[in-house]
Length: 105
Image (cartoon, rainbow, N blue to C red; front, side, top):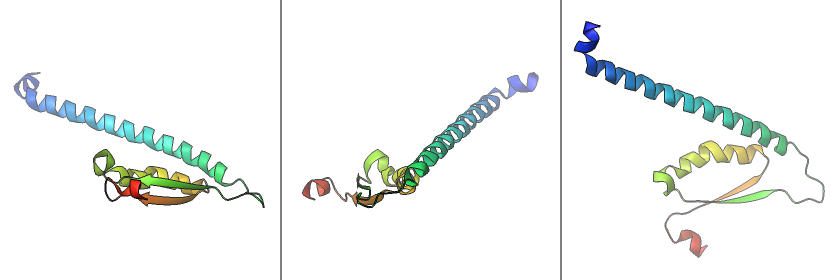
């Protein structure tokens, strides 16, 4: 007990770091579980046959890479793009290079 009282700042810091790491790992595990479930649903959707006279499914994504503190493009490529491709959609990405780019297109 004496070392704990003597080095209370180190113990407090160690406890906080341990708590933060635990929260981070828990968040990543939950995130991966959600992504895995969404991928399995998207795969089922993508395995459906397109009829002879049906048009292929297409989607247009307007991406602002400066959104979300400059993380939007990386997050889209990590989370959304794989789901769209697995589900069998033809994806067209229009990336904005400035505030007025999407308005002029």
